[in-house]
Amino acid sequence: MRLATGETGADATGSPPPAGAAMPSDLSVVFLNPSGQLGGAERSLLDIMSGLLLRYPEWRLSLIVTAPGPLVHHARALGVETVVLSLPMQISRLGDAGLAARGLVGRYLQLLLAFPAAAAYAVRLRRALTRLGADLIHTNGFKMHVLGSWVRPRATPLVWHIHDFVKRRQVMSRLLRLHSRRCTIVMANSRSVQKDVVAALGGSVPARLVYNAVDLDRFAPVGPKLDLDELAGVEPPPEGTVRVGLVATLGWWKGHETFLRALALLPRTLPVRGYVVGGALYETRGSQHTVEGLKGAAKRFGVTQRVAFTGFVEDAAAAIRSLDVLVHASTEPEAFGLVIIEGMSAARAVIASNSGGAAELVTEGVNGLLHMPGNEFELAKRIERLVLDADLRARLGAAGRQTVVARFSPARLVDDIVPVYAEAWRRAGVR
Ligand code: GLC
Image 1 (spheres, rainbow, N blue to C red):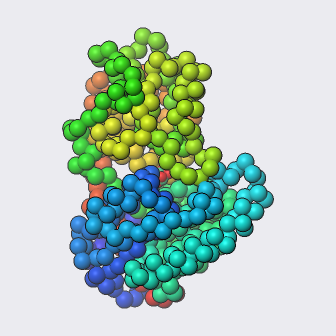
Image 2: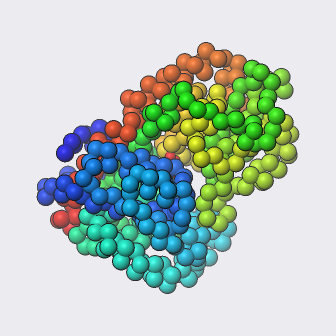
Image 3: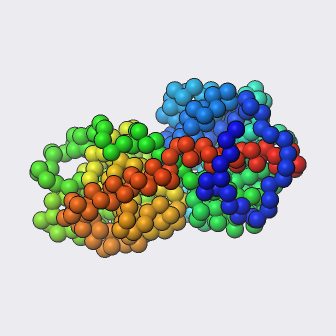
């Protein structure tokens, strides 16, 4: 087995890993994912599964998801046995973001009401895990971190792969803290998330940093493109127009409004067209915009003529290649920001929000530009600068590609994950 240290090594709790038995060579990993859709966490999961299978063809990987969706097809295409175990609506709709309006007491009440359904689901989940014969359980989203804790057999390591900040989710952070004794090890997708999770869990679980990766061939600078205008049902813009796009789910924190406001601030004569690429993905109530709602906002800001909405696009790589500038505008600290490294990998000039994990990926003026989250004036200035300067776009794009080759390759992802699994395996033996 190749054990590399990579960027992972840091133990945020400071405790040394205990010595113990090595992992079996035909390790069976069961992944639990709380959705069948393809958000960032799921794309990261697919990268992990394909990377592991490539390096360890003798490992047995299976996946349990809570709803049908594109994740299922993609996982099966990799040869991963995928089971759809439908989560009752009552639970799939629960979420801190969606329930914020109900207040804290309301949220706890919702949780309490959902408990019987969750307990019944756990019975089915445990049965599926037994059938799949898990040596290690890797959970990939908050609900599954909790459910995984309930169903984890005593000696089976449980790895929580944390893709989002925990502390700002009041209810979930308490739930995770409550269940943290059942978790063997935490994997965080950025240094910022690692710090956050250590603070949220009170340092009770070791937390390792594993940055995401990007498929360097799929997100190559040259390759198939899409006709974004046709997808959006608009006429192509005049020759020489610079295409600037926000590629994201419609989560309310992804900064769609900031992007639209920034477009409104640009000089009328600037040859630019904005693109909003993405659709509503998640079932959690009230956590996202709708395309219709965003079109309404575009109208209010007077940018209807300057922006096109493509809706959800399956081939993100082709969508990104169709742009000249990729904007990441999250208004809340972004845990990682997969789309940022995808844009860099495709050698597109990237403008990212300067906070959270996103700020760990971009060095201002070297491999991208940064703007203050939610600040449309700063964003507009950077868009204008890149629209006017093709050389700068090319320079940032080329440097971005170099960054991802050096820091975010799928091989590095596997190098980083395997020691975490090995450590989880050893720790589960001594718990
Ligand atoms: C979540 C995070 C995002 C990250 C992705 C993959 O979707 O919000 O920042 O890129 O997971 O780790």
